[in-house]
View (cartoon, helix red, strand yellow):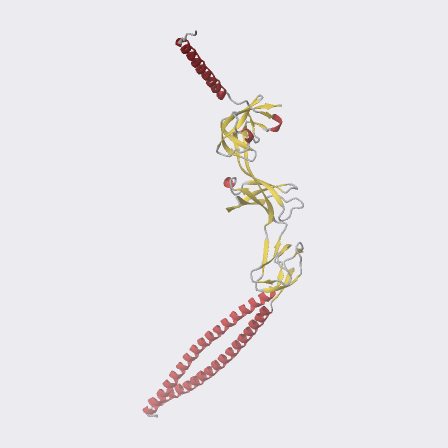
Length: 416
């Protein structure tokens, strides 16, 4: 018969417990070790990345943008009155002179207004002549009356003087002398009043003539304006150049102020560049620029910076300091670079993808067959280079191409 030994069962259970705990600890240790292992470095084909050297020396800061050539002299021709396009005389692309007729407009109402203004002017000029003649006649009558009074006064004065002498000699009574003197004094007063009235009337006549003359001048200016409006129905180029655009069609009704045509002077052009607003903050007037017309390079300088930004770009006008190559014409697409500054001695490298000025970043530094991620502080930047402030030394080699596919790794292996 079997004898039960409890101590054996107890020992066996203890051994099993110890084995289980040991196995669990071993599994945990292995798991922890595996977790602490770094992932294997991925392999990257060296021929697929761009590697550049970190150097020290002069650095030229530049910004680039595209744009077009635009004319300096542009004549936008607008309708001066509401009218209808009767005829297109000159087509776009034609060389024109200042007085070349481009369009013929029709506006019978404007023609009638010009005739009415001319008739009003002629009537006012006739009224001015009539007024002058009438006032001249009145002035002559007044002068004649003044002359008559003067003659009568002179006769009365002479008679009074003679009577004075006779009265002194006792030949003539004193009463007669006094009557003669009173008559002379009366005629003197009348003559003086008439002379004063003649002077005042002459001033009044000048004022009336001046008022009529002002009316004539006003109507003459109106008639001249109306005639100019009629003349503007023959739309002329206004400048020597090329007719670049005709904006209307025959039969079209155009209100006053409508743009009819555009004439440019093609030999005087400037470059208009659109620079990204993030790069335009350091641009200043008179900075040097180089314009690529696809048919040659032309040097210039900045003459205007648009104060407003449109579509995340800033418009920069560049005056050209050299003759344009053959084939250059308005609206020609161009590229341009503007030189911001020259740094005499800077630690610099080729500009990595996603590297921004005055910011922190990271790049892969090449060491033999491996590239390790390092943190870098950038300074000023240019088109293809950027200043390095911290993180790299002269002689280091870095990968400047896009490495975003390996953002999760701190190192990569470069395979041939």
